[in-house]
Length: 251
Image (cartoon, rainbow, N blue to C red):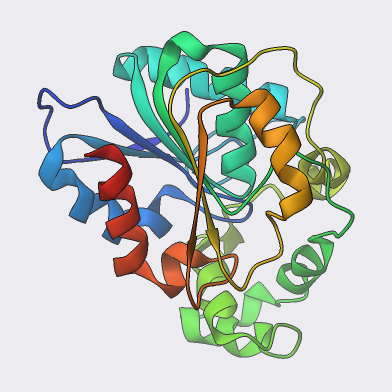
């Protein structure tokens, strides 16, 4: 089963489950999860091949949806489900295939479509780090800076570095192999009829007007909102505005 980090205690509110994106982890969502736990229990999960969850030889959205379904059944359905980027696609997949498990759905800056870009350059950047020369996290950051100029991304990636064992807590080989699956979205026959929020960064190009037809076909109750001044990493760039949007939708 997926590794989970729990915050808060159970109330009469549905459990709130958070699913991270590619190269992320439950730990990345700690601040938002703790702040949202004032309204009930919040559970952030590590997806397969990430964080402290198991490694597997496949990384498709069918796989991730099955993992999430198992976790939600363990937590207690139905839940309010939030997914960012790859986690958003995994959350959409579980909502479409197991709608009984999800009360409300929040998708952060992703659409149920295939994308033409790739995230392989970041795998190459992490592989380029000589872990034998890393004694502290800043050593890895300095090496990453040679190929990843964005300071925020350097910090983000090094959160998945296990310093004591000098290894990445990411199954880079499988993520590289299945990158085409990660950038795509499966053809699913289901429709999710419950309230759904597509929350995007106003400066991001991941959710475009031409995607709305497909979104509304799969999620008839979809609503759309944008956070000004935010890009794809909207929860990290504008955390207070992101949190306010969550509360407005859920409460």
